[in-house]
Each structure stands twice: as structure tokens, then as C-alpha cells.
Image (tube, rainbow, N blue to C red; front, top):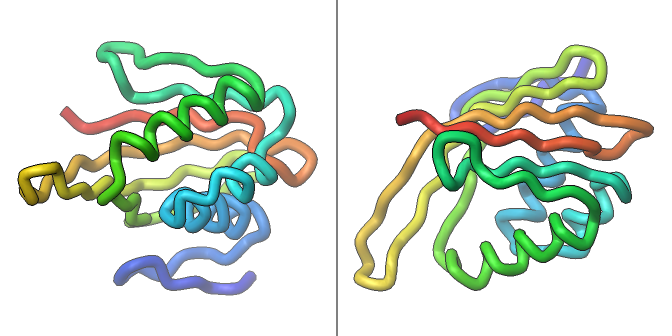
Length: 131
């Protein structure tokens, strides 16, 4: 199994983790087409907001619309992978979301995503935050 470095962490480089890493890289580039090409037609994304359960988006059109709106409102942000690991068709990714607001004030939150893969694509991305 290949090893990859994410931040200061070394992670397993399985095909499933590499797929999620590629998705996160596309997200940080704001490359919506590349992101959606890595997701199934019937993909599911559960956002962290609003608490306590977040909003659930189902299907390519709904998920794409969420990310397009997200990118409009968060031009100066990145999701840094802290740790990532896979078991079969599941990937767990711990992350830090960093941003700079319109007043140049930096902030961050930490969280975790649980991915379910199917046929080499992301079928489900469930997101959770600390606090």
C-alpha cells in the first residue's frame, strides 16, 4: 500500500483514500466539474449546517448547486486533511476548514467526513463538525 503525506501526517495511499484526496484537492481549487466527476449520479451530501442535523442534498444537480453557492460565499477558504483512512468502501477524513472573512479575520473549525464509495465514485459524503 502506498503512503501519502497530508499536512504533517502520513496516510495510507489506497485507491479509496486517493479518490477522496482528489475530491478534496478539486474542492480547494473550486473545480466543480472535477468534484462532480468523482461523485455518483445519485450522490448524497449532508452538510454540517444548520445544527443539529445539517441539510441533506441528493443527486448531482442538488449537490452541485450547494457547492456552487458555497464557493460564492467562501472565496478564501481551504479544507486541510488532518488524517484519512479507509476500510473497504468507507473513508473517514478528519479535517480543518480555514477561512478569511471579508474583514480579513482568519478562522477555522475542525470536523470529520464519512464517505461511502460505490463503483469507484463517491456515493455519499456525510460531514460533521466539533462544537
